[in-house]
Length: 188
Image (cartoon, rainbow, N blue to C red):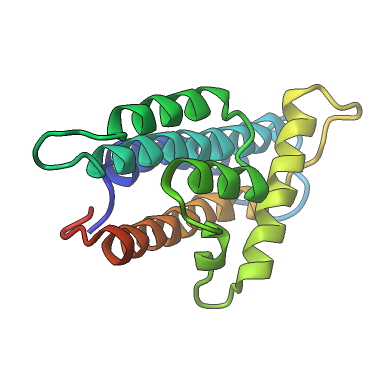
């Protein structure tokens, strides 16, 4: 089972990426090679994919801190944990591998969530490298690099799958940590 952050936030936002990919295909007729006049669609896909990843992380962090609430009073330090997490989430604006690691370490105590980022044909190092390259490209796009970055459609098309894999691995890592460390059951 996936987190609410995955189901209710990440997937719907990535549907916007799918709509842009469909629009791109309609405009280009799925021809191979350089296509003129549609580069902005691929750049928009990069921006939306990164913002979807960032929003997912903010929501899954908040969702996870709520799971740590003691079942019966006293609440001990839980209100302080939630306040601290909300503050960290409010300052979280760059979902790079290091910043994600720091967010989840500071809010939940997970030493390095990026160690959980691996799946078929993608090891931890490759996932981290790909994420950081994606963030660099997003920054170039968002901050007006000149000349405008070129984003190939095959790269843009791969982003929903990549972001979903990162989020699934993050969900699984958080779940395993909360279950093993705090004895929580039925996390996500």
